[in-house]
Image 1 (cartoon, helix red, strand yellow):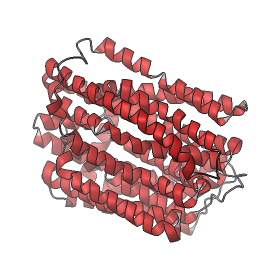
Image 2 (spheres, one colour):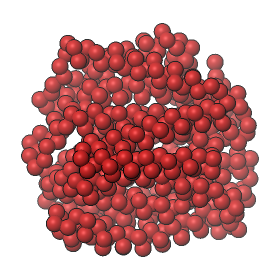
Image 3 (tube, helix red, strand yellow):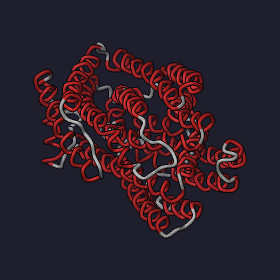
Length: 516
C-alpha cells in the first residue's frame, strides 16, 4: 500500500510537472512576441529586467521553504501530527516576517529602478511596473507559501502544479485579449497580476479540505528549521548565478539588449524546464527514502533516474542545438528595432543550458538530504565566479561575456555536485556519472553530424520549422536511444520498464522502492 501510494504521487507529480513546464514554455514564447509587436523591444526588456531584479528580493525568504520541506519529511513519514503542526507554525511565522520585509524592499526598488533605466523608459511606467509585478511575491510570502511547503513535503506537488497551470493559462488568455484590444502595458499587467494571484484561493481551499488536522497556530518549533540560514546561503548564491546575467545586461548593455537576452533565455529555459520535469516531484520521494535509511534502495533508484534523465537531456539539447537559430529567425521575423540573430549567443546559451541541467540529478539528491550546511561554501564560490567573470567580460564582449561568466560558474558547481553526492550521499565512485555523460555526448555529436554535413535546416515560417522539429526530434531520439541500448543495455532496459509503468498502466511512474 505504501509503495502504491508513493508511486501514484510520483506519477502525478511527474505528469503535471511536465505539463506545467510545457505550458510555461509555450506561453513564455507567445507573450514576449506580442509585447514586442505592441509595445516595442524596450518594454519587453523592461518587464524581463524588473522580474529579475524582483527575484533578488526573494532572499527575504531566508531559506525557510527549503528548510521546512526538508524538516517535514520525517514527521510526515512517521505520521507525527504534532511535529508537522509545530514546523508549519514556525514556517508561517517566518514567512510573514519575510512578507513584510519584501513589501518594504519592493517600494525601495520602485523608486531606485527608474534611475537605472533613465532615458530609455518613462520613470512613471518603470515605477508602476515594479509595484505591480511585486504583488505576486507579496502574496507568496504572506499567504501562499506555507501551503505550498506542506503539499511539496507530502509529495503532492501535483496540486501546486495544477493550480499553477490554471493561473498561467487564464493569465495568458487575459493578456492576449487585452494586448490585441489595445490596452496599455500598465493595464495589462495590473489585470493579469490580479488574475494570477487569485489562484491562492484554490490552493488554500484544497489544503483546508484535505488536511483537517493541520494547525498553523500551534506552538512553533523554530529549532527544527534552524538550518534555514544555511539554506539562505544557497538561495542567495542561486539568485546571483541565475539572476545576475540579466541585471548586468540591464546596467551595461541597455533594455534592447535585455530583450535579446530575454528571448534567447526564454527558449533555452523552455528546454531546461522540459528536462527538469523528469526530476520535479522526486525530491520528496528521495527525502523519504533517506529519512528511513534505505541505502540500497536509494542507490538503485538514483542510478535508474540518472540514466533516464541524461538520456532525455541529451535528446532535448541536441535537438535544441539544431533548431535554436531557425526558430529565432521565425520568431523575430519583421522585428527591426534590434538584431536578434546572434549565432554566438545561441551557441553559448546551449552550453549554459547543458551545464545547468547536468547538475539536476545530484542537486536533487543533495537537497533531499538537506545538506545545506555542508555545501554552502561551494555555492558561494559558484556565485563569486559567476559575477566576477561576467563583470570583467561584459565590458568588452557584451552578452557573450555575461554568458561565459555563467558557463564558468556552472562548470565548477556541476562537477562539485557530482563529486559531493557520489561520495557523501550515494557512497559510490563518481565514474558512473561521468561515464554516462561521456557516451551521451558522443551520441549527441553523431546525431548532429548529418545536419552539419548534408542537410541545411532553414525555415521560412512556423509550420516549416515545426516539420523540421519533428524530423530532428525523431532522428535524434532514435540515435540516442539506440546508442544507449548498445552502450548501457541494463540501464536502457530499466528505463523502458519504467516508461511502460508510467504510460501504459497509469498506476506508477517508477516504483521508487522496487527495481529490477
